[in-house]
Image: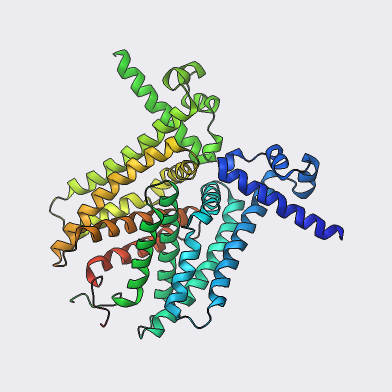
Amino acid sequence: MPRQVDHESRRRLIADAVCRLADERGLEGVTLRDVAARAEVSMGAVQRCFRTKEEMLLFALGAIGRRIGERVQARLVRSPAQSAASALGHAATEIALLDAEHRAEARVWLAFLAQAAVDQGLAEVLRANYAALQELFTGLVSEARAATGRPSAPVDAVREARALLALADGLTTHVLIGHLGAAEAQEVLHTHLSRLWEGAEAPETA
Amino acid sequence: MPRQVDHESRRRLIADAVCRLADERGLEGVTLRDVAARAEVSMGAVQRCFRTKEEMLLFALGAIGRRIGERVQARLVRSPAQSAASALGHAATEIALLDAEHRAEARVWLAFLAQAAVDQGLAEVLRANYAALQELFTGLVSEARAATGRPSAPVDAVREARALLALADGLTTHVLIGHLGAAEAQEVLHTHLSRLWEGAEAPETA
């Protein structure tokens, strides 16, 4: 196996160990030593892959972001014949990470969000992720509204995309701390989505 | 000054130091030693006030929760003649912590949320806070809808309250990491609120 590939797959292995530790203890519990132990590699191997803990965290964050993005795209591609509205619903459900299967990913993502509030490097990676998601959702909202005969100005679709991303993140957080059950959160998300084209533009005097 | 009062005010002083450190570095940066230095008290004084770091963090979290709750109540009491809809808007704006003045509080709250995902003690305190906020907002939503001639079933008001709390938290997070500006987040929140009674119940065939 060429050395370059070996290096890359080792980085991914280490990033996985970072995520498993962050899931169990929060980012606070992620030390180079524990990551090496969990990935079953030497401290030296970790240090050859990542010069600093910061660099290691950035790589792990990027890896989760790519995985979520790929799942969203896969949902969109899998059912090309689905309506724009249901495509939007699937994509929103995918990023909200509400089901038990993605609970660990959600916990790690939240840990990164909190750390990004005091760490510019992490914040930059997250901003790139959210900018891409916002663009994707703006497109899906425009399509869905056009398909239901309620085309909206571009600025509205951007605002709707922002609201959806914020609502999804807030719901994820509230499920993680046990304020809401996954089904309750799903119902809130579903109701929000269904209103996007049902009654959103009704006149004030209605 | 009686010893009991002295003890309580020292605990609040220490909680303030916890919040300032968490704001600068995240919860990871909060050590007993640094808290003592920041509060300008001895390590022994910190240990007499709080037996563990966990107990100290719980107290600090409770203090922020009470402060936010008091501000929301104050906004509601200050303008008793305001419409239910504008009371709801004010309360939602208050908890979203979007303005620069409350940025530090928002950062600390987010740090606690992330840590609560891996810490049952913190999660319990947060759940009590969110349960109280949900009750408050459920009441405000019901009143606002009744006042605009769109009374809703109780279960709807609960769902709306959940959506509002999740949206507010998500927007706060996105402002903290720089994905959204405060004004953009405020616009998303404002639009969401205005829809609660404007077009929310419009028929599907509209």
